[in-house]
Length: 314
Length: 314
Image (cartoon, rainbow over all chains, first blue to last red; front, top):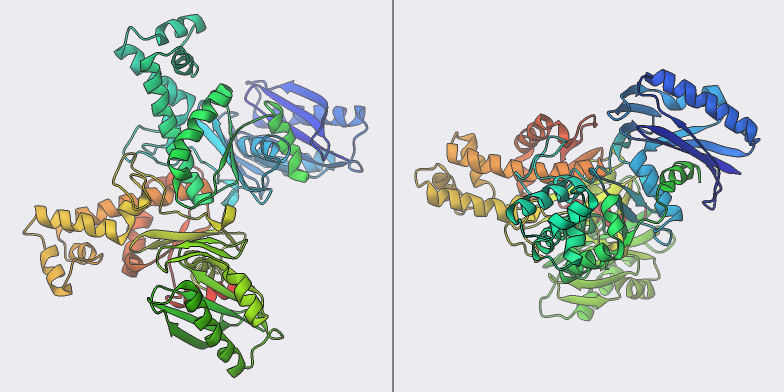
């Protein structure tokens, strides 16, 4: 038996058959044409899926279901994409449509939730029961796994972990609130702070690093810090403080066994984990007499979404 | 069948038999003698329990179990009180002791968790599956119920919802962090802000209200606001902002169906709910396209702890 896991992105749709022990088989993909409306995109996906299933001799006798991870606001219990800014989809009854056309059960979840479930079941988190994934990219996303299962909240709209205020009346956030974790701990937030420090310190090594990379991105301050630039060190230490305080908030509320970091900034790997772990350890992981929370880096990379979408059926 | 629910406090221990539909029968209580050590206190409780069970003809044939809600840091899976500042208990293997002496299964949880489970199953939250209780007293405590069951986190040390930072580098909190929700949204935080405003505005009606009450407590600003005092209005509006931002953080992360407010400040009832609901509603409950979270006031009062402790067996 397998489940089909599909990861829908803004430019392409990627899928695979996934075995119940997390092996990825028979990958496929198709581009998303920006000129197509939502029905045209789904129709194309269904054609590809029909051919894919036939070619690999998959049908409802050996496929547990088709899981899809979709960016945006997803009503997973109802199987409806409420709204996807990225894809320009709205009120799309995608589960009903796929089940009708293919005769196989379907489930959907938010793309960040899918990636979280993939990492939790088969990646960095497979030894843990309760965990949190925090994705440090353009924004701060993530997901929550409780007792080995995805926790999605009412109408599947929970786990918006980037949108929790840590600085009252702080920086404006894309969500309309002020001072959200996302505004400070995303790559966007880090780049903002990096640029300010560079403007203030024309002698900083960050200028050289940025020149070499061809741009100011989330790597600049980390790389210049490793080269002992004191201004970069301030930028990174502030970043660790923002992220560390945000994580300790989640630790105190959810006290998970582990947190998995993913996204661009998580590419700093052990260097990031060591700094964060020290920050939290010096503060008792947020609270007295509490068990420590393992800080981990994601392992599955781009496969996590596909694997996690399939894992909705495991 | 019943379960015995016991609420352990700093000055007294209160218990009752509770039916699976939440009815409280045959209450009992005993004082806690500050001079007793932890073993002496438990020995006295066991004597009282033995007599109580015999008197009411309760035994393992008609008692599902004995549940206890205990203030402090509780390792519920292991049945151990790790540390209770209030009771001066440490590393107390209370479940093992009760089970051995009484021959009836026992379970423990933190007192705030017990009250949350009581309210969730039989009080204000009984129509909802996923919910949060926020207790606005000396501190800010609470609990989390997911899918009708208490979520306690690793070693039972989660749901420390008062200890999440909303003001980075803000007021010192009792936990050692700075800027926790507790430092602003507890009765203690409100009283602190009330006193500052009173000192700054000697003509405020808050002085009269405080004189009538004989002290400055959490009611002063609310009462003076109802009498149209503009300084009190500022204090309360700031309080609503602190609490509202804290609640919206939880809404975005957990997206529960409802939040139940309890503790001293929750006695403001509908007046408090109306202000908070408007604050959150004006901000779309924190995030776009999300279902609203019902804001409710606790219903069971002092019974919630006993009922919830018993409900560990329902």
